[in-house]
Length: 205
Image (tube, rainbow, N blue to C red; front, side):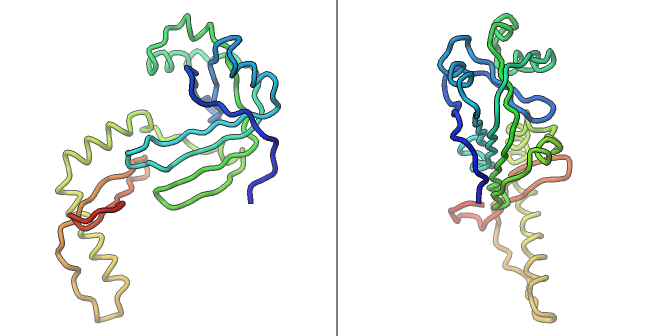
């Protein structure tokens, strides 16, 4: 079961700006005097949840961090990155009150591989971020749009190999040459995840 923990302040909605430091700890840029800033200052525990966009290939994937928050300086490199990503000017970023959440409990949901687990803060901090994460949506859209036929052929080959490996020796019959609908679900430096289903059939890949 989940570890015992105090009831946390939940950060959601509003015009909050956040980034992630080198250890994976989120930093929140809140407006001074805002209700969120007041709630964090008065609480011993804060929770933060990041969810993959709905409707995308990674929909259902999420990570939740629970821990304590303390005021922090916004690192210069992160400030540049946030300004580029959000369009918010340097002056406004520097005028915000920044808080850093130090995770005590980390929970992740990996919908692609049907995994759901708690991990230690040390494991979380040591994990390597996917260098393609910022542009992953555009990368997936381009690969799936430009290589649909090739992906379908690859899916057919993989389906045939899986059927052959599972069949009793000498009883394998080639898989039906049914056209497959295939989609790359995720890409990282180690490779990619491919989902597929018979063409024309509904449901998840």
